[in-house]
Image 1 (tube, one colour):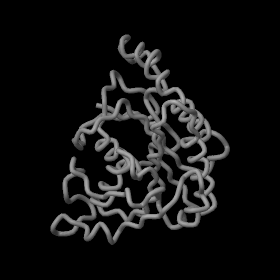
Image 2: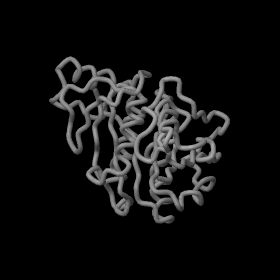
Image 3: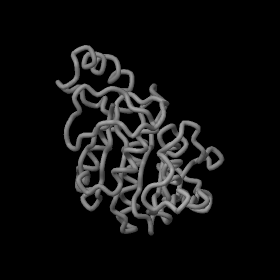
Length: 236
């Protein structure tokens, strides 16, 4: 597939980029600083081989299948014209600034949806957070920590994630085949391929999830029509 990726210099985005190339996808990566884009992953992605692999388990040179564009999700004029011809857009956009409000999730996603609509590209995957909901499925201590610590600590990011999810559920994205993936606390552990997912519901007692496994999950959902226009939770 031809994938257009955003947020590739962050922890999950870097994993996604490496795994996408390792499994034979052609990738266009949009980054504000192209010099920070890395394709090698010391933690390791999925095993070599699999559907589409050559006889030796490889897919040819990753560099030959990667195009890096300088661009910012909040400034679509730098990448809008590049959307056409891709099969899917995957956003790992995020903000590390916990002190100030952000619009990178909502406004960035709005720009993606508008550019996709203009280019005839429909498939979109975005990252949110399981921390948005402190559901009754959570053990009481975890629920209290989520409500009174995590949601307050990340209130600006969570507020914008909620705006993003509202945008995708609105008429603005009615032509978009979107999936929002909500992971719990992320770690820098290796890719295991052993995690749980639930479509349109909540996982019972979700634990952490490595960024490598989150990237693996995202790639696996790209061609899954069951996840169109819904939220997916993923966790150990």
